[in-house]
Image 1 (cartoon, helix red, strand yellow):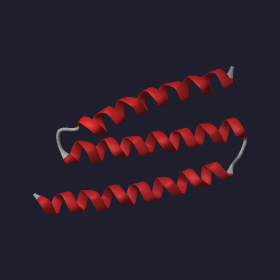
Image 2 (cartoon, rainbow, N blue to C red; image 1 turned 90 degrees about the horizontal axis):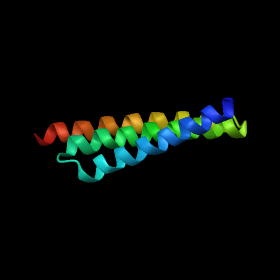
Image 3 (spheres, rainbow, N blue to C red; image 1 turned 135 degrees about the vertical axis):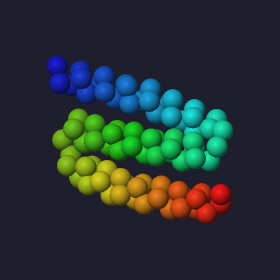
Length: 86
């Protein structure tokens, strides 16, 4: 039962990834693209956590944590850059 829910969560994360990717490509402004990129990284972190659960590998959670920290810093840097543009 738990594995079925994990697979359901993976499917929903995949659908969310596709929707966020569409927004990233079609975003009318740079701010929309930055937010879509942040959503894509969050979904990727979710995928890493799901794979860690399915494979019983805790090291994947460490990778997801480092990726989350780098993603957060990257979004802050881009937001600062876009703030200076205005």
